Every structure is written in C-alpha cells, then in structure tokens.
Length: 88
Image (cartoon, rainbow, N blue to C red; front, side, top):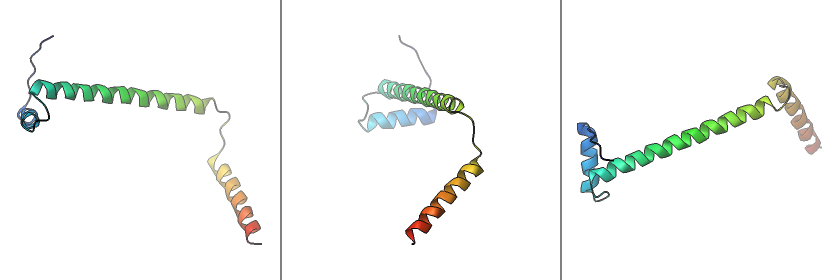
C-alpha cells in the first residue's frame, strides 16, 4: 500500500534531522516508527481504560460503602492504643 502524506515544515525538518543523524535510513522509516509509537500508545491507553473499568467494577462489587471518617477514626483509635501500649 503506497500513499502520499504531507508533513508540515517542522515535521519535515525533524524527520530530515533524524535521517541525517543516521538513526533512520529515510523519512519513510521515521514515519513508520511514528506510527508504531502511536499504535503502542493507543494499545496502552486501551489497557489502562480496561484496568480502570475492572477496578471500578471491583469497587462496585466490594460491598456496602463505609464512610471514610469512620474508617479514619477507627484507625486513629487503633494506632493511638498501639502507641500507648508501646510507651508503657
């Protein structure tokens, strides 16, 4: 499949600099690498979104919610008691 794509001046200059540096043999390789990186980013974004959906679902299915203040009060009492036991 051969297509023609137009790069703006900045993109073209970057591509030419990458070729001149020897990192890529030609501009086509630069474009292919750019497409590979975009594909990789898209796949990672999908994985992240899937992970977030899974975590959301796990949270929904984890049981009745507990008020955060109650949890923090209980933890504070627990650690205060532990500190008192250690100081004896």
